[in-house]
Amino acid sequence: MELRRIYAAYDDTGVYVYQAYSPLIAEAALRKGTFSEHFKLDRMTWIKPSFGWILYRCGYAEKPGQEYVLKIKLTHSGFHTILSRSVPSTFESALFANPITWQSAVKQADVRCQWDPDRNLRGGKMERTAIQIGLSGPTVRQYVNEWIVSIEDVTPLARVIGELVKNKRADLPPVPTEHEYPVDDTLHHTLMMS
Image (cartoon, rainbow, N blue to C red; front, top):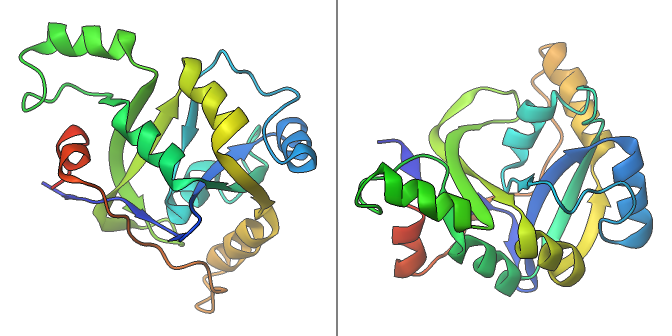
């Protein structure tokens, strides 16, 4: 099994996650300091603590509808609540008696999590996995209205890295260091961490 740990940039006041959006959604969020105009509260939104993974996912801010990369700071309590509400997006026999009970849990849950191969800044697969967390229902409303501390536009950095990677340059700019994010034993089990 690949190493399942949450790696993120964080400090005493919060933890950083990333999302990529269209200019309409991103510019409104940057103006307001949280998501507002054009952001659909009735759709699942996915947050990713791995900067390398978001760069890979949005094509260094070049994919249509993902032209902005936002660095969002969440309160630790909000992030912990999100993690504690999560249900895996695939069946895990260590958590659920059978696929039917898992499907029932997925239908009732506001939060889904999945583990994918983490990516370095060049898009290459790493030995560890990265968590992605999908928010919907009351949880996405709390995310928008209660837990966001700040939103920063890191699109220029994403594009500079993308250009350097495309030109096979070795000298990538510095990015925030991601450390293992501590979770308690209950979350360790809920998230099926190794």
